[in-house]
Image (cartoon, rainbow, N blue to C red; front, top):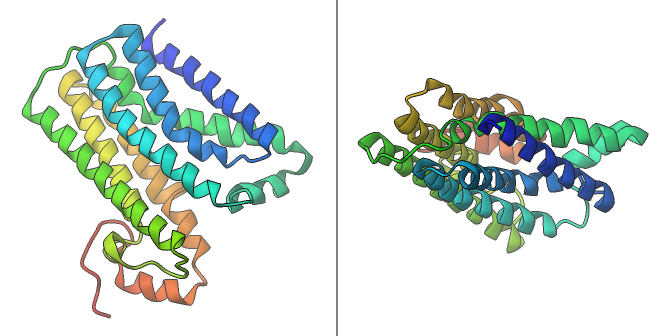
Amino acid sequence: MSPALLSILVIFVYMSSWWVLSVVTKRADIADVAWGGGFTLLAWVLYISYFGGTSLVLALLVSLWGARLSIHIFLRNSKKKKEDGRYANWRKKWGENWRIKSYLEVFLLQGFFMFLIAIPIILSTGKQFELSSLAIMGVLIFLFGLVFEAVSDWQVFRFKSNGGKGVFDRGLWRYSRHPNYFGEVTLWWGIALLSFSQTANLAVFLGSATISILILFVSGIPLLEKRYKDDVSYKKYAKKTSIFFPLPPKSR
């Protein structure tokens, strides 16, 4: 079985299993918890199935990212007694068809994007690792993005845990309205660069391009910006703060 076909099978079984759990718990927002773990599982299955130094390096890096993200989302969601608003609204909209709709439009759709984003991991499967300046650069970019994302998530999580309300505009959030998303996009470009250093295959950048498009134009930033479009405090924050790339805040 090719790495691509094995990846499809792993992702399908994995996301289907989480869907079953979501039906039992009646909380489709566990799909967010499943996201990071899916990449981690896939990376290790590919390494164990085909070995190769590059697969091991990628599995270790993806595990760092996936474990941190899943733990963060689990802790965040555990404080919510009710399902995340996005999923609750979808459940209400779908009515009696919410089970099959959530399977197709949440879990399998996420699985599809998981496959696209994991392309650099899949194409690197079985490759022996060769240390080069490009590979080192890819790892450093990944680590920078990971730290940036982790710190920004921790800052806003601590703010809310301490009873903070309203717009959080301190720390990394002073320089970007979505610093966690900036870190997320950055680390995947690091993964792609590392993969390219070992494969010389431009197709590896399809993964980082996919996550960039999703976050910048589809389900990431646009949804959050829409949620706060009528918030006066957020409008003031938005006028002086970069939407994505970290930049010094405007004076007025």
